[in-house]
Length: 121
Image 1 (spheres, rainbow, N blue to C red):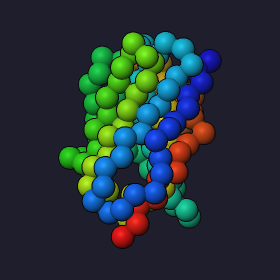
Image 2 (cartoon, rainbow, N blue to C red):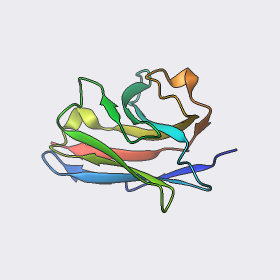
Image 3 (cartoon, rainbow, N blue to C red):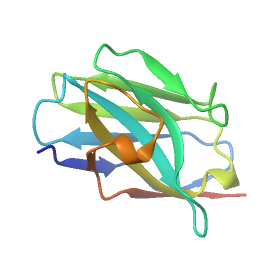
């Protein structure tokens, strides 16, 4: 079992930056971690992942603006978000899956409760 908790969300203005964290309750160095978001009335959207070897992959919608990193010493994965836009407003989730990363939310086994990000224009 892997417990995940996101933190760092809040209200920011367009153009600002925000860094979200995803803290695990145990070592996750063998796990891939994905980031997703869900806006009201919309389906959950894949943003990117970092696999166990720290290679990353991003959705086209956030490529160049969002960066995922991990620190296995403190069991935490980060999502750095730059140049935020109002359309980035959503609840942001991290999810973990053993070894193999995926872009599909249904393939992740463990999820955090989410953190709200609101970007004002």
